[in-house]
Length: 340
Image (cartoon, rainbow, N blue to C red; front, side, top):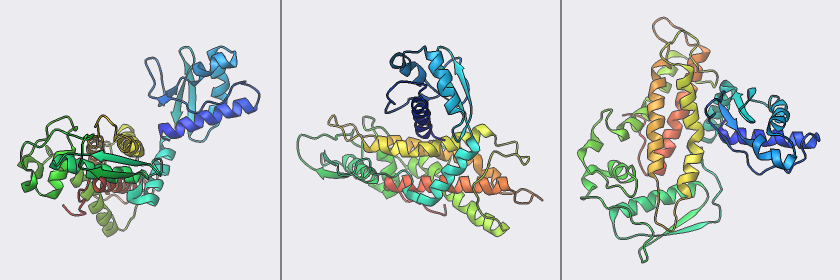
């Protein structure tokens, strides 16, 4: 369950309490859900009880008690605890969340994270005749398009997209490395144009992202050779693998779940002040690749092991990660090869 989904779950609990006559309030349009603060517990926390206490005419703790009873019965919620003046601390079923997320990515493919929040909107980007500005505008056009919007690029004043130019001609790096070199730094940072972007080693973020994607594809081929396929399930590693824990799986699942928000955030930034941040997507892909690489060594059976449900679940999670990496690279204008 992602924070966005949990926010909807919290609002559903409020609505049920209102319908039952336990709270006399208007159901708010949103509920803020985030990591628990100091003294908190569980996976997420919300201050919705404090927010509703005044309009409800009841103490925050009383509102929290009412909402806890309704939240505890929601699908995907495994526990609710009240802390402090009335914070609701929520534990969720991570296995169910992971399965639902992987199934969604398998269904949507590389269009996972695409939406229609910008449908009908047109953004005008006025850029100078500069290679980095052109690359930035091109990437933004694809990302905005993924959310249903459209970008029109113009070369006229006043310019509203003027990133720091590249210090030298990046063309000798080749198309993929050029895209990464110019998009990975924030627009106000000077890009680094060097052969380091071509080196296949861990210190090269572009290599890590493309390597993680290629490895997920290789694992699918290897698994087929061993006679098993991916199946969403519990990947936590309860079959003897000590090198992958629940925390690692949850980190990867959280990054995959956050992908739609990242795309929506980047798509919404053709601001009049000229700030555009595809670098948020590149940083997200690097974090996702690193989390994926932690999972990969445990996907295939070892030695005399037989393929288990956990192996199938890890393969499904790895393939989902590869799909998201490929989709993100494509939006940046970078190839995602299956073999590297």
